[in-house]
Image (cartoon, rainbow, N blue to C red):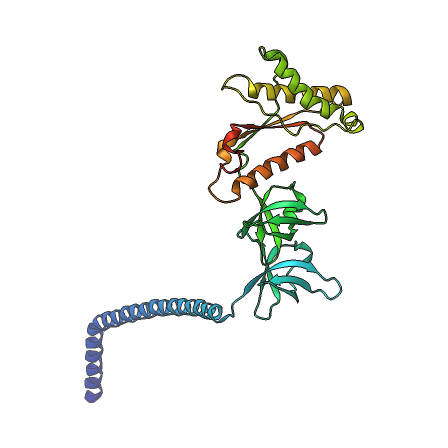
Length: 340
């Protein structure tokens, strides 16, 4: 009995000691738990960073792979579209001076292609994309419109060549003397280039000067009217009597004596006489005042070319039924005597 009592006392003492040390052990366990939670949180954060790094590496790898594929892609070339063949679905192009018949990628709308437009070719010389019109090339002068979508143009050395007009030129007003951008390899005129070289030298106007505004010079005015108005108004009588109309009139005199004013009055009077004769109220006259000294150019043939353009413009206005007077001011700078 005494042994059992002693055993129970020892057990109670052990339990008492354990109860006393339990809070400390609990604190240690709580600290370990907090430390473990911190380590777990750090591991989760590190795992997130590693995942983000891995994702960024994958994206960078994808970009690098795309760049490598682009660099490894064979070069693509440009060509000019000419026409389409509805039977086999091919198109005719002009590439580096060669006329080729090639296939077209399914995503390219052939019906939207216009002659002269740029297309992109792959390594197999098939059309894979569509571009715009070429904006670089040679500047040439339109000499004559052939009426079937073609035109005769002149180069810098006055060499003639026939080119096809692109769609923008077919839609807009184009006339002889206009400057156009030409793709010499494809023989296509792509667009009209506004050049002010002749426009700066020619003052085109509709005069409103009358003979009543001219003081004196009655004999000179009468002679000029007979020389200019009669051949224009009575061309049939001149032909019947085999009379030759004068090709031009020379007005000479000191500055300010009325030479330009007389020419303007003749143009205005001629338009009025034509209106009275034809009954058309829309008839007006054009007075091309050419600044003679500014036509001079140091390059061979440039002065002559600009003079041709001036008369070409006069013929265009005349073809519309309008009287045209071409007036060369200070003409002695241009039309000198032979050998001077």
